[in-house]
Each structure stands twice: as structure tokens, then as C-alpha cells.
Amino acid sequence: MNQQENSRRFFLKTSSVLAVFAMIPRTAKAFYEEVKNFFVPNKEILPLSLSINKKKYTVKADTRTTLLDLLREELQLTGTKKGCDHGQCGACTVHVNGERVLSCLTLAAMVPGKEVTTIEGLANGDKLHPMQQAFIECDGFQCGYCTPGQIMSAVACVNEGHTGSVAEIKEFMSGNLCRCGAYNGIVQSIQKVAP
Ligand code: FES
Ligand code: FES
Image 1 (cartoon, rainbow, N blue to C red):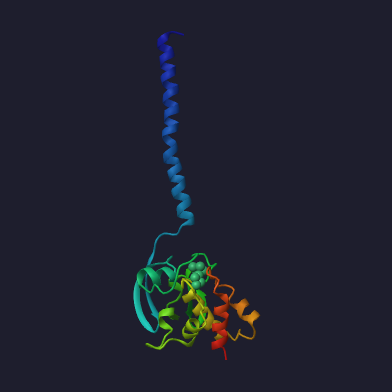
Image 2 (cartoon, helix red, strand yellow):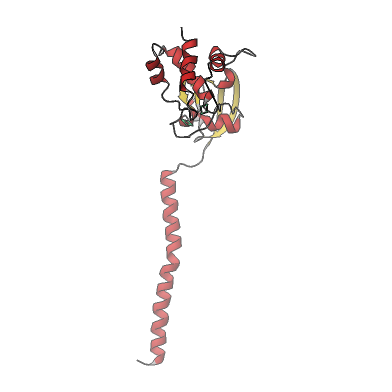
């Protein structure tokens, strides 16, 4: 085999290998796009009419927006807190049609036609809700971060009638965590308001 033939073979082999390498990024990218399109729905903006704390709001939101993010980021109702954002701490508890829900696990698109109540809507003008007053009187909080969620859950706990004993209150408030450990004050607050 002469030198010219060797060079030709070397050129052909090298260019084939380079061509394969050049294909990989494009193929990988196309594959990634296909997988992404399959699992991640396309962005879709919906007009939403909401009733929050008895006030009407008309907003446009991505269908994937959680009620928590809509309240905090779009409507500046920041009383509702984001703790875990995964349904584990209760900091984001609000009421939907009077029932407690975790707003981090509720899509904003699920609540049109329903009444949403947040901690900002609990007081009657300047008069605190009895549960808010009880939390103050019974030392139901320390840093206060979990408190809006605790109070919303506590109000629901009373309305649900789960206040028969300390054990029952603890069980039905167990979805609301308090890193400061203000649990005794929280239970006492609920007992104070319970019929
Ligand atoms: S932020 Fe919703 S449960 Fe923690
Ligand atoms: S009062 Fe601080 S986390 Fe509950």
C-alpha cells in the first residue's frame, strides 16, 4: 500500500468518526426535546376569575400556577406562607369554600367559582378573628412564620368539630408544623375558641 493510499484511508476513517460525533449533539438535543414535550405540557395561559376574601380578581395565569404562587406573586397576598412547597408543612393553608386546603398543592385553575379565604380575610375590619386573638393571648407563636397556616387550620379544626380533646386537636392539627415548637400555645388557643 503506497503512502497516498494510506492517507486516503486515514482521511476516510477520520471523517467518518467526526461525522458520527457531529451527529450526537443534534440527536441528543432532539431526543431531549421529544422527552420534554412528552412529559412537560406546553405553556398555556388561562384567564381566571377568582373570588378571594370576598373580592373579585381577574388574572391571567399559566395553567400550572399553584394557588400559593398566584396569591403571593401575582396578588401580593403574602400572608400565606411558602414553607416546603411540597404539601408537608401546612404553612400555605388557606380555605376554599370553607375547607382547609394546601395552596401549594392546589392549582389556581381549580378555584374559579369558589370562595378562597386567606389569613388577610379572616379579621372583620380592625377586629381580629377570635382565633387570631387567642393565638396572641395564649402565645401560639414565636417567629410567626407558620402562624397564618396554623390559624387557618385551627379555624377549620374548630369548624370541623375536632376539638373534643387535646389528643384530637393534636391529631387534626398534625399537618401544620412549627419549627419553634409553639404547639402548647396553639392547642390552648384552639381550646379557648372551641365551643
Ligand atoms: S408550603 Fe404547602 S405544605 Fe408546605
Ligand atoms: S412560630 Fe416559628 S415556626 Fe411556628
